[in-house]
Length: 146
Image (spheres, rainbow, N blue to C red):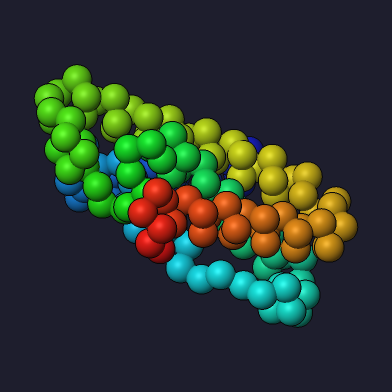
């Protein structure tokens, strides 16, 4: 069963990255970002399974954006947008990092789905809220705009 889940997750990750026509040299896009923040009351009304999905989504955004945070916090930003020449070597670096990050996150997803259900619900809620605060701060950036 674990092999089937792993295979499905890897297939999903590969299909979502290869099925999209991306502008070359883009650090990350909107598809990897969350679109909603929650209150503690909203989270307390959710079951553990829904909380774990929120946990995963927020961990993914942090995982994807963090390596590029000193360059940009805006989705769709390319190398040239931040003043880096878009030569084949630098494009390959970004594409390779994104590919590796997608594969690594598949394994993180497996770990989270296998272990986090053993956490107390209150701790999962705390983690989701903590991740959301991190994301808000990352999105604010040095200019202070979300």
